Image (cartoon, rainbow, N blue to C red; front, side, top):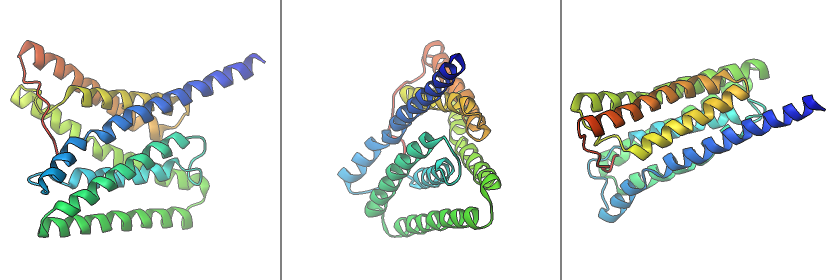
Length: 232
């Protein structure tokens, strides 16, 4: 009876961590809304880049695939958060394509087709070339590689803050949400004993804490500019 109680408590903790991760991820998904309000208002993509949303879409699709029962069991919260993320990223890309000018529009259409083609290839290969035990390893390594590539953005921001001694391009609440999301999914992965979840999110937690420490240091000690501009 005690063992059953511990098992239920353990499961409740992992579910709570996963749900928290979903909620914090939602904050990140809606963060580009000011950019797209500006794009739709001005009917132009101006100097904004669509590449972050292309990267975000392929990352969400791969991680969503990893979280589905056909690949992994018991981590459906990974699939839910990334399916929502994929919808947001695809919506942003479609809006971007609508308001982009000729060459930029064609480039985004080509990249979007490449993303869907690559994802279709991953699905086909994982289902036809791998059995369940190795299938999870194959998709898991792809998801980790995708997430690690996404960490290039925080590294760039960290370098920019140190170089400029300003936190203008590192909005506090966005950095906080990134840290809390990574920490939540790190805990979720640890409780699920899944290194494909806790390793990349552990890295994300470290980078997120570095961003918060840099924010505190440069916004107080150096009087850094804490404005939160529109980033695209």
